[in-house]
Image (cartoon, helix red, strand yellow):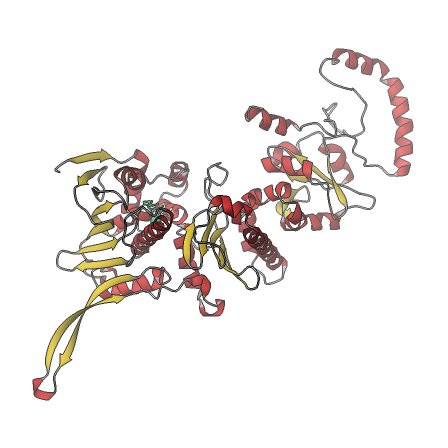
Length: 579
Ligand code: ADP
Ligand code: MG
């Protein structure tokens, strides 16, 4: 067929590409890591599909990734015989790059730090396939999906706002990416990707653990014969460049930090380093190995309903599924990594997983391990020479999500309360733990006071604050939407109940003070009887009760919720969600 279609990139995609082509992103080598990572995913998917679909006619006997270099024409090819893509998938997956949130982030970065915008975007979002344009003027992709007869060719040039799509009558199954490399930089042969040693170095550094062989034909000169007869001879042999060792099966002591980090980038499609690396291994009844990561940035879609949980399930080194929800509760959806279980069937389905005792046991252990890792970070933060910034980063990025666990994970509630931090009236800048709050509680204070609201400022200005401020009592300032939910569900911490200062009667007085104020109250009730009656009659429709209070020091009046009423914020949330 000679049917070539020209299509426009989405505006957002084009803008990102432009940014990237002109960026000075220092680590151009990573384009190859991305291509190999994609090829590896495609091979995983093909193997899985061939298990699931016995009618699928594919040869899985030699699944592999191949690199090929043509030095004269400066063309580098990366080929896999994996699952491939249909035409629609090529347009969908390759034609769009804008993940949700990129648009806002790009705008924001361009405004605040235009010089580093590209660098930051790449760091936080990654650019996957498009990173090829850092090193190539023109990129072509040919692919045929397993089970389909026709193939698809995609092509685009660096800086172009369009790409072409063409149907191919014949194409090998899998995907071939062809890069027409930019002219070599005379001064910098370190970035010459037609050099065999360079490719070998990159694969070793970034993709050594990839489970599939990454092969390349290598030409060597050898000497043949003896003495006078000695002649030079060129031989070509196919070499496998990676060791293919699954990282999670290797003992911790033998794996370098760098290797763990590269693996993280592969499994989580991230471009930055993880905050924490958590290798795990369990023997006995339920044998499994796991390698989990806590990222250093929250993804933009963390609060999006469609956000996927990040743990992959393997069974005896064979990839089974992405986003295995059965292995991680929703409130730990930011955790990335792999779990390799020993005793599951390769045919295991979601339905089976939901019932599986082994999976439940593993999940329980993973959750405890992640929480104890957070606890360790917190411990390090409070020790003298510890790394304070790590826990702070964690809390800043994921605290709001972790607190969902206070509602949903009763078993670990104490632990989660323990590792949580809150803003409070104690300090403008520093967050406090509940333990620290309890430590500072005044004699006779028996509750942990809090107020929920939209912002610190709104809460600080609340009339409810006045009496507590006057008494020097500390109040937790809770401004995350999730706070509204958990404070209603969690009764206490360390034997101290949580008490909203906006609800019911807040008991702030000692016995003597009480007697005195009762007398005062009686006297005042008489004095203000007329006003109270008038207010009660006037507001009859709107309020349950009008009463005198000693809570206020400067405001004349305030509205108080009943102990079990919705707070104004919760009311708004319910209304917004149409309930
Ligand atoms: P990501 O890998 O983070 O999803 P990429 O830009 O690297 O982002 O790739 C986009 C998508 O294109 C992949 O998710 C995958 O579905 C598809 N894709 C890329 N390369 C291949 C390939 N070699 N074989 C099959 N599908 C691929
Ligand atoms: Mg990718």
